[in-house]
Image (cartoon, rainbow, N blue to C red; front, side, top):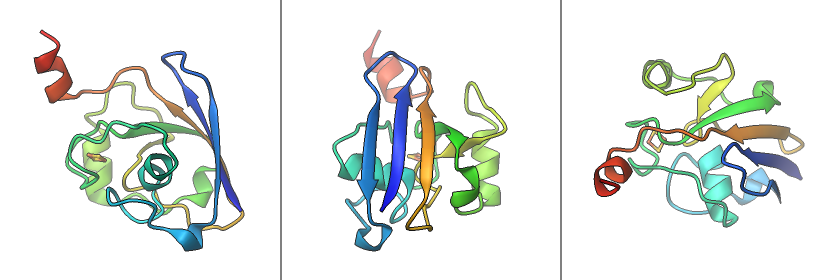
Amino acid sequence: MAKIRVIFENGDPERTVEFDPADAPFQEDGRPCSVLDVLLGHGIQLEHACGGNCACTTCHVVVKSGIGKLSEASEEEEDLLDKAPGLTPTSRLGCQAVIEDPDAELVIVVPRYTINQQVSESGR
Ligand code: FES
């Protein structure tokens, strides 16, 4: 089984998900077995304003451990990540980073801030 431990910078309680990548997709948004797919499919909310289509940065996560277990970032993903607030050398877009190793163990941090036009507009 693969495992993702999720730490939320906003102070929400940590969550851990165990899953078999062979069971992906777990729901409809993002690439099958991407971080977004796994989290949403296990009841863990991650922003995904564009529906997991590599067209926003709201699914930005910071990979603290296990980055080598994820698929390579495409040029499109890298370009988008450049616009993500709080970018780090181990940042990825959750909808594009696919877990390929069935024994992968990852630790990811969900940053406190994302740029989500819809939230910032409705929040006014
Ligand atoms: S959900 Fe928009 S880029 Fe991942």
